Length: 376
Image 1 (cartoon, rainbow, N blue to C red):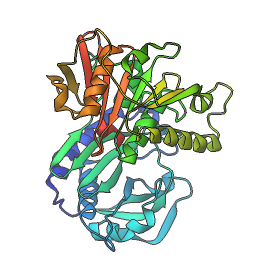
Image 2 (spheres, one colour):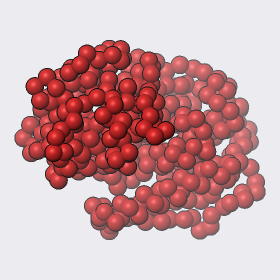
Image 3 (cartoon, rainbow, N blue to C red):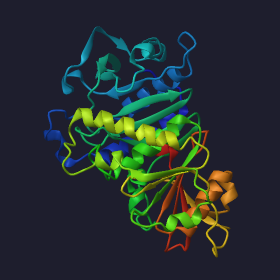
């Protein structure tokens, strides 16, 4: 393997290796898809090659590729190259147009001191190292949580010389149950778990890049209307329940067609957040309104301070003013979370930032969490 030339690859590879060593289940070696333990040199080389590939162009396009360190015999139905290709930035850039669709990964294996691209796969065993190129200088290191789960857990985000190593929420930090699938991304093991829907909605909201606000309010109460300006132009009566019905106990959660339907419904609902104003759903995932304007609840004080945190190593919650987070969307979401203490607010910015707002009783203020690194 060539000496890595991207300094961050060498600096952070040991910490990534430590993450995989600490979090891989002990019984994983009994699985037919077991992948041997990673070493630091492999992690360095994969990140280095992906980084330099991300800065190149192929017919004017930035490469969008996903690398997985995985022997071909550990995945079903691999597509094998007759002659494996040495791992390198230029080789990855040339292959990028063929593998840029979601779900396709370039498989990499070790042969002596060399790393070779052996072909492609759509099946990724749990805890296999994945390095994904999302844009120029922007990489995400991740792994699948479980073999039969569509979810990945982000381990680290590289953006040039800025690197964030993700961590679980500190044990002493208050966290509303609704937000667990966002802040602690491996609490839900199956793609159709109700708690997973908020994560899916957040990813879809961020993807449309128009910015938007989603308010999640308790079902069976109208208290949230006290924080909304009248009239509500786009009220939905009766509440739209297609998403809620897809989660019914009589549904086969492993049905692939249902997964596809769920994805379309999630995208349609998230698309409503692009309309000026906020979209309102209940905690049973029933749509009740969109395009609503948030106002301060009568008799409630204006938000002056809130706690801000990010689930990254070394991150320390700090009090800030709401204006430090953004503009009108962030200010109104913070006000809503303060006035409606049983609700949560999610805000997607046009630049890709994503922030959640929820009341924290132990801190006696709104707690905002920057979570875009978990959604890449």
